[in-house]
Structure formats: structure tokens, C-alpha cells
Length: 130
Image (tube, rainbow, N blue to C red; front, side, top):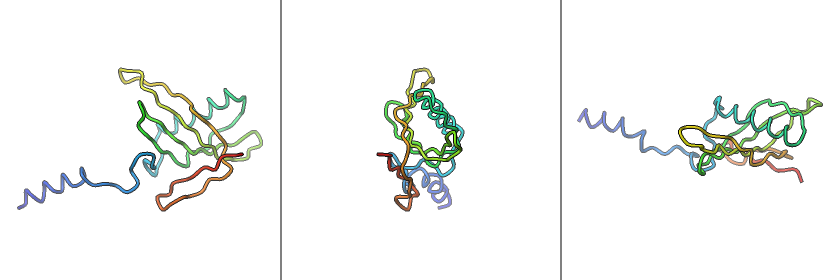
């Protein structure tokens, strides 16, 4: 009986489903270093492409989807030259290159008119500028 209880305690976490962990849902509450690196890449690449001068502040939300690599949708807070903080939605594709290597591609970067919670999972929704 004790071995059955021990076995179930070991196996239960493997088969448990965490609410909100489907495709395109928030991956975690705290943002890890890899996501910050992707956000810094997105801001830097946007600045290079558009001759802007945004300065990264933080990541409000990260969602990830597996699509021949990893597709990240980031809600980023950044400030412009006038030090006004604004929110942006960046989509970054972490494209596999083989043998554990990868390259990052900025798919899109757009300013959000507003960012709001859309459900109890604390997912943000970015309303793009018109």
C-alpha cells in the first residue's frame, strides 16, 4: 500500500494539467533571463529597422508557441526619447539552426494603444494603434 501511495505521488505531477498552459498561453508568471534577452533583441532590432531610440523597461507578458522553433509573443514596456513609457507587442521567432544553435527573427513589433487583462489567467491583450 505504501509503495502505491509513493508511486502515485511520483506519477501524479506528470499527468496533472495546469490551467492556462495550452498553446499561446502565458508560460510563467516571472520572466526568465532568456525572455529578457529576446525582448532586448526585439527592441534593438526595431530601433535598427525604424531608426527609433526605444529603451527597454520590462516584459509584461510572454506567450510561447512551438512552430518549427519557438514563436514568442511579448508585451514589452519601453520608453522613447521623451522618457514616455509605452507598451509594444513584439513577435520573435527563435529559429533552429541545428546542433543546438538558433537565430532570432523579429516577425513584428507594434505599439499598443492599450493593454488590458482579458481573463482570470492574467493574459494581456494588446490593442494595436490604428
